[in-house]
Amino acid sequence: MRLDTLIQEKSVIVVCGAGGVGKTTASSAMGLAAARMGRRALVLTIDPARRLAQALGIPPTGKEPVQITSELLASAGVTLAPGGELSAWMLDPRVVLESVVDRFAPSPEDAMRIRSTRLYQALGEVVSGLQEYTAAEALFEFYQMGKYELLILDTPPSRNALDFLDAPRRLARFLDERTIAILTPRAAGRSNPVVRAAAKVVRTALSRAFGESFADELEVFLGAFSKLFSRMRDHATGVRELLTSSEASFVVVTSPDEAALSEALYFRDRIGQLGLVSDGFVLNRSYASNQAICRPSEVECSAAPQLAAALRTLSPLAEVESTRLLKDRQLLAQLIQKSVDVGGQGALALPFLDEAVEDLAALKLLSAHMMPIVT
Ligand SMILES: Nc1ncnc2c1ncn2[C@@H]1O[C@H](COP(=O)(O)OP(=O)(O)O)[C@@H](O)[C@H]1O
Ligand SMILES: [Mg+2]
Image (cartoon, rainbow, N blue to C red; front, side, top):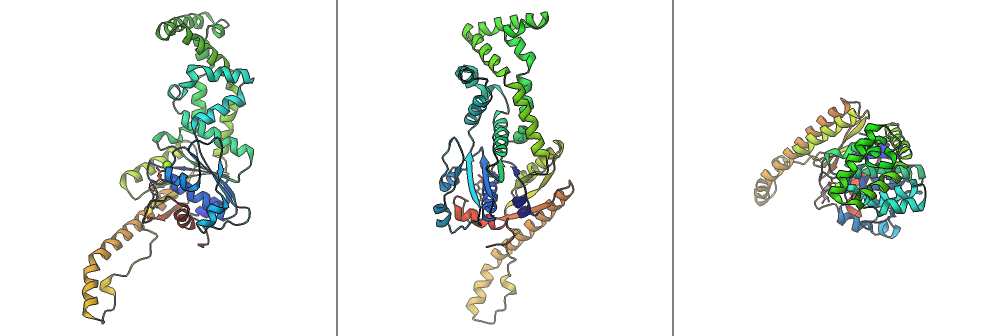
């Protein structure tokens, strides 16, 4: 897969895959590769790799993206091409939701009222897919802002990660006008008698269960929120348009592990079902890109007999290595095929580093595999 081309040309790259395969790592490495190629890149992540974030100087719940400093880059020996910039943001769904409410509420007082309800505070539990929704919302906001040339979205570690494409619609459905009419007597007053009757029943039930004040809060919350709908729906359409456009790309990360591979195929298919094209796979923690090693038995050894003995001892180890390498190369070839089958570009292997990827130096190594010229 020409990941370098995607990194150079796209405006949005959505990275998905099973938990623990290296999505956050690959997303960060992609961001670094983009910056090294001279682009202004932002990595948006919901599921932070804490040590990596720490190493990059990113606070866990910042209100906005943080740019990786030139001192930090220099200390890891990373040089960016002119114009290149790397920023990262660990999305906190709550922070994003707050800014949504602030932006969309008709007045600051409305925003305050929404935020003070218990319902708003428990919204995360009430609306499924909220995390996904906030991710899409943040992505779209940054896109519209135009401050960054490439946005890389590291999706949440769940099978539902791509629900964010549906989430705005689902959120809108949850809060659709009929629901509101049933839950808020004032709105129900204007609707038909059946809805009015339902509203009365629901309100009585809610008051009994949670107390009169909860029913009042619900009314305030839904009343105020209802004003946001049409605008949120507009955004939902915008997000979809952006992600279905040729400016966006979907990449699935996997490890050579069987469970991860089957999840990767699940994501490939899910992307297809959503009417999108998955551009390819990143086979992380793989030996496929390692240099083929020379087996000790193949080494000319007319030298000292001790050396020959040492080589014989190493033989099983070398055997294990080359078997692993061959296996990963076969796997890579299969993944390439599985991507091409659905109109994608193929797959790219990232090496298994000796240590966890927790600093810029390690990211630099990985990013080199995503760039046309390895420097
Ligand atoms: N290519 C690699 N070589 C070595 N360790 C890796 C590699 N990719 C990821 N890791 C390590 O694996 C762990 C999980 O990676 P992470 O990117 O957080 O996964 P995910 O975001 O998919 O849950 C981290 O400790 C990370 O440092
Ligand atoms: Mg992650």
